[in-house]
Structures are given as C-alpha cells and as structure tokens.
Amino acid sequence: MHKNRLQQTLLICLAFVPLLNACFAGNKNVKDGDIIFQSLSAGQGKAIQIATHSKYSHCGIIFIKEGKPYVYEAVQPVKITPLDEWIARGDNEHYVIKRLRDAQKTLSPDVLANMKSEGEKYLGKDYDIYFAWNDDQLYCSELVWKIYKRGAGIEIGALKKLSSFDLKNPIVEQKLTERYGNNIPYDEMVISPQAIFENNNLVTVEEK
Image (cartoon, rainbow, N blue to C red):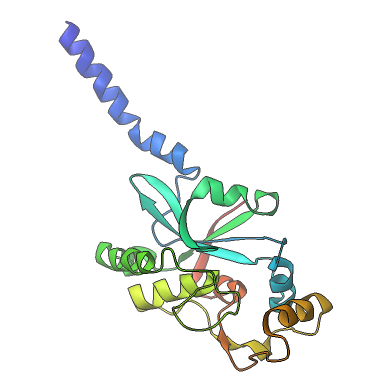
C-alpha cells in the first residue's frame, strides 16, 4: 500500500516538472536562439536610441541551460545572465522577444549547439565602447549577430556605416566626442539593435 502511494506521488511530481521549469523560465514559450530586446536609457543607452531611431538600446540571445533560460549578452564583460535578472534591469522591465521565422526547421539541435559554442568563445571579453568590427571586444548586437552568422550561417540584420546613423543630436555628439575625440570612424561597419529588431526574418513571440 505504502509503495503504491509512493509511486503515485512520484508520478505526480514528475508530471509537474515541465510546469516548474516554465515557472523558473518566467515564460514557457522561450526557446534556444530567441533574441530579446530592452530599453536601457541610462549611460550610452539614450544616445543609441537617438542615433538609431529605436526604442531599444540593448539585446541578447537566449539559451536554455539545465531547464532555465539565460541571456548571452555583451556588457562588461560578455557574460551569461539569468533571464529574470536581465529583464529586471531594463527600463520598466519592458522587453520584446523575437524568434527566427522558420526556427523549428532551421535551428536544429546541431545548429543550436554550434551557436552555443560560438557564444561561449566570447565569454569574459570586454565590452566594446568603440563599436569596432573585430573580436577583441564586443558590443551587444555584434555578439548576437556573430553568434547567428558564425554558428548558424544566418545574417540577422544589415550592417551599416556609422555615418548612416543620426549623429547630429547633442547627446549623440557628446558620446562620440567622449569616445573618439576628433577621430570618429564614420566608415566603421556597425550592427545596431534596431537593425536586428526590424529584420523581416524575425517574428515577435512575446512583448511585455
């Protein structure tokens, strides 16, 4: 009798494991490879929003580890952050999650493994305040773009020259002067959070 009750209890507990994982995730719909965006108006965030005409100044890529979602992000340094912690850091905890339109077909287990491996190469690297297109240091959208390009062979968003952004606003001009002085690299190729956000190959799966 006691043995049967123990077995029944165990089966009930196992049935709740997916639900518990979803609760820990904060969103049962997140999947490996999802891209998440948020507004960070502090620091250089406001300048990025103005220069790119975007509400969003920061992004990262979600991967599930041991049943829990984490965000691979380029801050100082490049690191892995629990999803709930990442969301709480944004303005008003607002975020948008986007997914590759054909993710179920394109992002196979092997491809996702390659993407995770690619992301782990950059962990611990410094944040790139100069937005240079090399791997010595990285900024947020550069990390996401390179993980997709090198791990899955997919370009998420179009690179543009720094000169193509709105650089005349005083807030933007101040940041540029702080970083570059009189040697602003107008021809440097840059990928912005907005360029990824507006990519037609992505669909919104959650916004809060």
